[in-house]
Length: 253
Image (cartoon, rainbow, N blue to C red; front, side, top):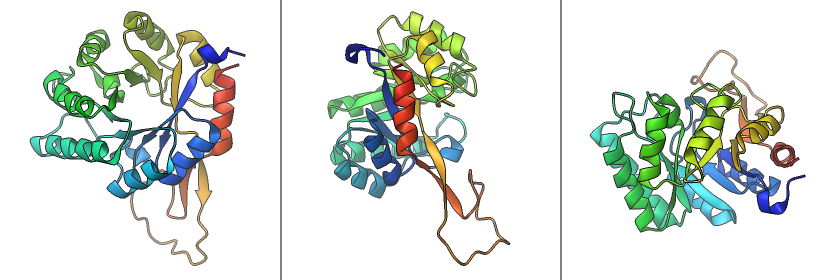
């Protein structure tokens, strides 16, 4: 077992208040509250943020991402992001999760700096999310993000899952040299977490720890699809308390 001093902490990517509460019950250190996990996550509603803040005792970070797709945003989307950050500061959140790129695959340092300054002025921390994995040069992006003053980078090492990007994650941790936290995320589960921690030296990890929940609806219309979700219309995903506990246990073994 790892000592308490070196304990690996779990951030849970929570797609609802219910998921956030399950994360807390399971022993998560921090929640990243978001919506639309099927799109890689988008900003949750004001209601979700407000209720989550009211009920959570652990740290609450909110994803500030106006839509799925790429990380090249219009002026309108940028204004929306700033408005969302202002709401997070008013609600008493602990931090935000951001990422904006330029068309050439570099970090948009000018716009990101504006968002970081907005958050830090209110005492909020900042995580740079997996937009980092879409950068043309991750070493250069790492330096830009360190200079922005972000606390950590959530990354899969430029691959679809963290375990696929494990060598890059180890390289990034070495390059970071304690200046910023490299937090592996994407496909982090009971099977992969111990290897990721061992090989990369990660002290923070990121997982949704989710399971499928079946609908209690008695009447069902099976002739319609309402969208392109991860599940059908009669199930949804939610963070599972026991999965959170097990991932934390295995990370610290």
